[in-house]
Image 1 (cartoon, one colour):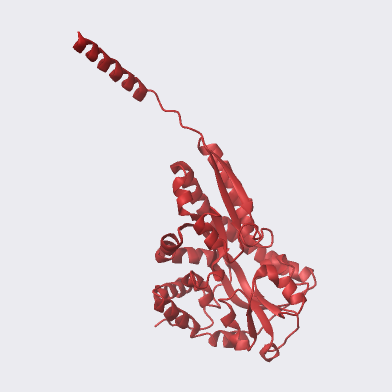
Image 2 (image 1 turned 180 degrees about the vertical axis):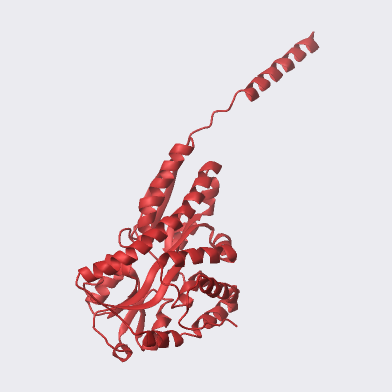
Length: 362
């Protein structure tokens, strides 16, 4: 009798298990909160503007339409969560889940990620610059791996800046006029100015207007989209077209790997896909803003002029050894500097661009 009762209980339990397995499980809808931000402001800074206007709404839309889940995004730009020099660390510790920043403000930690600044006078089209930078990242996985292994963040997408030129508070007609003049820049681009004999000053975009208005510096190495966006033409109305090149890959958008791994697989895939789409959207926006930025400077009364091909070649020739020097510096830090810079120079050359100087990495 006891055995019969036991057998009946086992059969009943088995039936219940079978029924439970046969009934489809209902996915539990969850609300996930992400913090996204940058030290630069949206508006005058293209890569941040596209984060705000494309990445955020696209993530929300796709998660809502394609999954059972919902995404809430807290935005913090213009240093409201982390400054331009703190964003990498903010993503690393989880203060930001997704951050966008210029690698130029991490000269030690992301030294080799500044490859484009180490090879000036390259392609001047912003979309070409970003396309080539993506090729470089794909062919040199060390760059993305370093972000994950050392700083706990996944590379979502790359962007950059349009063609660098020189804006000044004073007019100048020859290189000699710039000798001893204080010119500011992001840091890794300051060696470009050695040829002109200026006094280089490392600074940040949000500080530029006041610095030039008060005479702390008399000029800025910058690209048209931001020069007009930050209204630099007001204190420094002389914008000289030199063509140091578009810095593809100078900015990156990354995500804390712990946060990414905690998301459901379908949400994670959307985040990664939107990150790659961001590159295309931001590159197009950047090139458009480069063109409109130059025209806006002219319309605002700024003096936009150029330099002769001869002076530009001489300027480029003065930096002929610079890429090799930076490659060897990266090598000495245990980074594949020679490999990455050689690869970058080859990719630009293969694109059909003609360098004004021959760079050799030995």
